[in-house]
Length: 221
Length: 183
Image 1 (cartoon, rainbow over the protein chains, first blue to last red):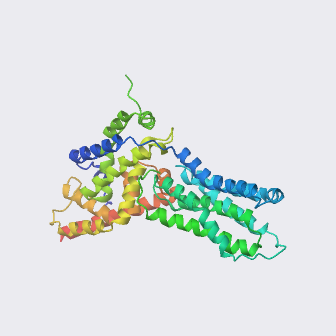
Image 2 (tube, one colour):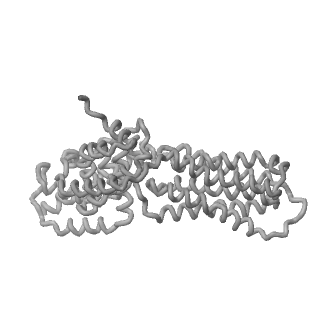
Image 3 (spheres, helix red, strand yellow):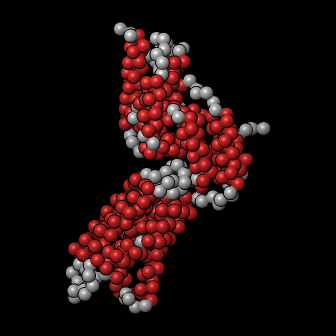
């Protein structure tokens, strides 16, 4: 029987070098360098995303406290959940933008699931029914997420699209609205599940879809 | 004077030294060009992808981590660019197969036959992109299956399987070709 053909020598044979193409690419690269765009370090971008998501949520908390929309005892009672949300948002932001953050991205997803479960399970039955319809929470949740969503999309364009990267960026963004929901909403666990967590899922899906459809500025990992 | 390593050049480039980029380009552009030529087998597209690869190096130099080996980082960018292009331009495969059928019959192939090499490159285009990438990276670029697995977020075993299946399919395609030529 004839031995199988060894393809290695053929595969490793170098294709003909196209010097003209190399010259054209180098000229394009020099043109890009001539624009003197600032170098954006991924850590700086991650800090920006953290500031835009968790930072915005904390700012909202401070404003609500200042205008009397929330009380200090309520804020203290919700502090563990708020800390979980801030932590989840930060881990997700870091994981989304880190070039080698595969384990961090998985950790971010895990943390988000645990935090979401805690948000539902920790919610007590309200003393008095709210007069506002449930969708107000969903819309408010999505509205406050717009700013971090923009920051996340800009940052993600600097790297090759990876679904898990986009998912954790979306989870980081969605934590902002969840944080606001913890402060401003007194409704029951069912409402948190169907209106707050739904909004978190929706904003994550929106970020993944937009991020996938945008032409990347870079294919870097 | 000791020449700088790729990693030292990349760190200098990241810190603002544009001349370091020129050195990196001179060292690596032909290799990346070869990789892309095998991946897409379309001169114009390969040139676009080569440009996309080096523009990505410039635009994302802030994503380069000190201590990262430069060549795998660069080839990851090129592989990502090729993967994206293949996803969006399925007609490349159709183009390659049309070109293949238009190829005149050549004498029975042997390893020194340039026609065999041309057919091999055509056959590469018939592989699923994931298998093609695994074959080129493992057989041509000398990547380990751990490195290919890390690139695509799969296990080393899965990367080995992709490369093995791709390689076997290549053999099969070239065997069919040899039979056609012999008839």
